[in-house]
Structure formats: structure tokens, C-alpha cells
Length: 385
Image 1 (cartoon, rainbow, N blue to C red):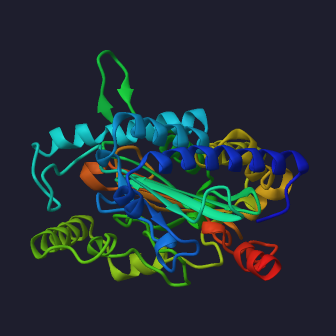
Image 2: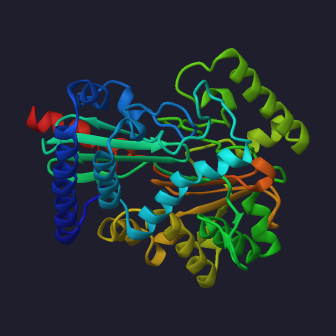
Image 3: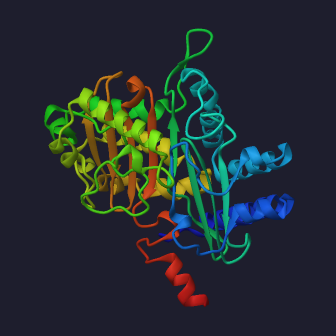
């Protein structure tokens, strides 16, 4: 974690106390068998760094297993960990499972009674809330949130994933329902502002990958390519579903015409690909800052301010924009913004370009791991244990 001001440190401490109180009250309300499902020690091996954005078991206790009062306690915790806009967006994303259920014909799938279920969002707690080192995770289809507390402060809020399926749907009246409109529209505004030379640097491939290149990997490495759709679930899929996912990917690749060269061009590298913001205008910088706000402003304002501060002035020059696919609305597209620490990644290719994924990650500090000042977890255990 990078150094913070005394004001932001106080905010992180205050949030840590609030989260500990809320999680503690929730745990006290659970039966013994529920608590056993919801909790892990801290550290917890690989489990704490597992994360998903598919309708799989995310680990922990599902909302459907809770009473109305316990569900409300979970939503209070989400509200504490998110900004107002972030909480509203997350709530909408969860409710969209009802839209998907209708879109997919109310089917039974994924080996469960209801294929698209707004009750299948899971809360996990690692360690003892209020102790010197603990964490919590909340996730389900298209939501994945992670918070780590060390030394009485919230030190990490990433990975932070929001998706939307459908990305666009009708409302009564002239307006459309678009939970992640800014994530898409501001990026397109930025790429449309580029000169031909800038655009040639930014666009890595004329064909977009059909998912996030980094997928749900806990740790990213040079050369990482888009994972197969069958690999982003917890455990091995049942044979029928595995074949369905594999066939869906094969169909998508055939329709898009994507090649091995396209996958190679969009592969992740620790050195950012694309157009450096140092080669962009002041107006383009402002569009980029507005785009970043759709990711960074998911968390409480006091914490988001620390993140925005990294990109004031010439700090914005440290970022690069990479794009793949069409730059026109309604056509498959993908982008990522990357710096030495920050990575945001987005795609909209599936379900006839009406299915958005977006994630904000800290390349050095996800899950409270290493940052510019070292590894917070290692430092904590070296200093205090």
C-alpha cells in the first residue's frame, strides 16, 4: 500500500472499525453450521485469493441461506464498503439475475434448481473481525468485492469487479437501463478523440477477445491470454455444462474470426501495451480521468481520493490505453488501462454485444499483497509475529 495522508489513514481506520462491527454482528446472528461455511482462518491458503465473476459457487454463505434480517446486515456491509453510486450499481447488478432468468427462458442450469438466482451471492470472512489482520469477500454472478484489513486499516479494496448482463435493457418511456453506461461510453469517447496516429498505437487488434484477457487469475504474469470459458469456474464443470461452455467459445471464435495472432496481440504484459497517455492532450487526459472514476469511485469517497491522487497532474502520463475490436457502438470491443500499479479491464462482446465485464485491479496490492512499499502481509507478520 502506498503512503497515505493522516486524513485518509483515519478514514481507513474508521472504515475498518465499521466493517468489523457489521461483520461481527452478522457472524453472531448465524447458527454454528452457517458460521462454519462463512469463515476461514487468516491467512487461509489459496482460498482468500480465489475470485470469480461467473454464476458459480464463490465460497462462503449464500444470501439465499439467510433470514431477511441477516440479508439486510450483508447489504449494510456492502453499503459501507462501496460509495453510494457503487452500492446502487451493485444492487442493480444482483437484481439483473431476474432479467437473465427471463431472457434464458426460466431454465434450470448450472446444476441447480434455478439457473439465474439473485440469492446466490456469497459472503466470506477470513480471520477475526477487529483483529490486526482479517478480510472479507462478497461475490456472485457479475459482482466480486475484496477487502483486506491490516493494522486496523483497510489496506486493499481490489480486485473490484462489476458486470452487467444485459448491459442495456428497455424501461418504460424513452430511456434505457444501462448500469455500466459510463464504463463503456467514456472509453469510446476517448478512443474517438484519438488522432489516426494515436489510434494506430492504441488498437492492438481489429478483433476483440470474448472475455477479459486476465480472467479471474489471482496473480498475473507476462504472456497471459484469455482463459477458456470452462476455466473461470470453481472446480471442474459437469460434463454437459463443460461441453456447452466449450461449444459456446468455439462458436464465438468462429463468428468473430479471431486468430492466434489476435490473442497474442492482446496478451497481458507487465509493460503496458497501447497508447501512452503522455502522448495525449489535456482534453484526452480529462476523459481518461472521467473513465477512471467509473472504476475508482466504486469505493467510499475518502478511499477513492487516494487512488485519484495518483493520477493528478503528470501522474496521468503513467497510464496507457489499449483497445481491441471496433470503436463503434454496438460492435464487439475490449479495452484496458494499465500503469505500474493500476489495471482496469473491460469487454463487451457476448450476447450480441450486450454483456459487459469490468474490473479494477492493483497489480501490486490485490488482496493486500505487495505494493510500492513492499508486501503488507509479509511486513505485518515480520513486525508483529
